[in-house]
Image (cartoon, rainbow, N blue to C red; front, side, top):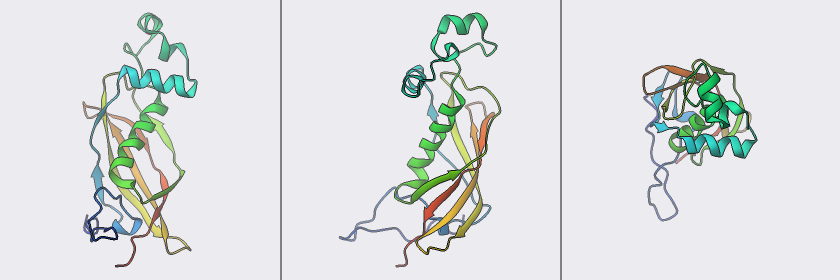
Length: 167
């Protein structure tokens, strides 16, 4: 990751601003990184399915899950796994730099269940300028892995990301 450690951004008083995300021109194709992990809890599932109206019994009825589920444990909706992965990336790579999530192909490979801990491994596959000098396009190939190292979901978001300002 030769370019991922450029000069830090500073505020008007000259203090370094910590936690600022990556600019599209901070990375090169082939750069790889991973996020911290996060355990998906029963409460996360309950709040998510309630908030979005995904009240299918597979996510809301523990007795039904015990009786008929081939998974065996309370499943996590694939869309929640995607959202959690995006949250992990927001915290580590997009603060103040991400402008828009434009598209992605998403594939669920294995079930995720309550109590699983996920993290995201990313590889930069596209980083280029747009017609506007203050922004570029950044695409990563993302793998969401559980605590056993199993790939549970993959996606390849294309994002509009700010250009690192000239110093």
